[in-house]
Length: 227
Image 1: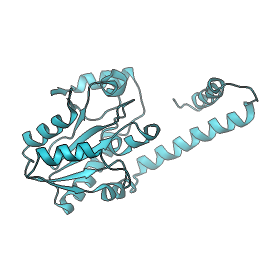
Image 2: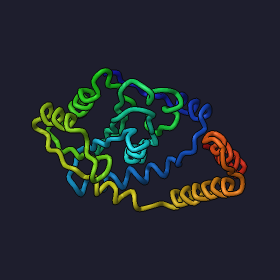
Image 3: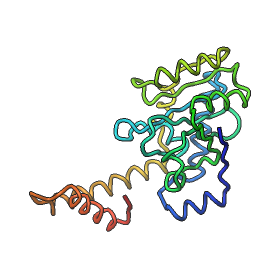
Image 4: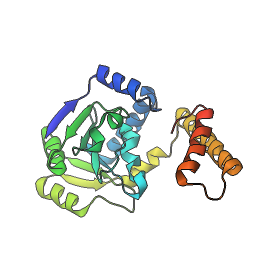
């Protein structure tokens, strides 16, 4: 297990090199406050939030809500979110640790669980003093849980911990949109409309997928967006 802490200077350099859109620090503070309120209501000491690249990458959304992190090919990374202190990303060595991926994150602490992601999770929970605590698990969605071998490993190696699934409670928090989030949704819809309109006007039989993508990309850039 390797602990990395990205300095503010390095994170800023990555943000400048890879200028992905991101929410403000105030927005993440709002999210963290709401999450910790839910944790208090549920009597939780920490959360384990899973994310992964299945379903064309759509299963990253819960971990991304907290970290802005999205991997490329990993089936499972986790965010460890304590009731006190900063959250951290627990990942396997791979695409998630490339500069372009790390540039998205708002979380500075990254634990590389190489070669064993699950052992890194257990070590982190133990080191933070939550091995006897009440641990909330946020699944991919209410119908897609964490892998069974992950569950078996966690239960076996943290026998005194109590595990509680709080996926629905977590998703309920995500439904409460701030003005900043609403503005981002409106902007995304505007860029999507521009791409669809361009396709309707310029798409012709026999065009390749790459040519169609080029039409959309050009339209989005014209609107001041990025893909």
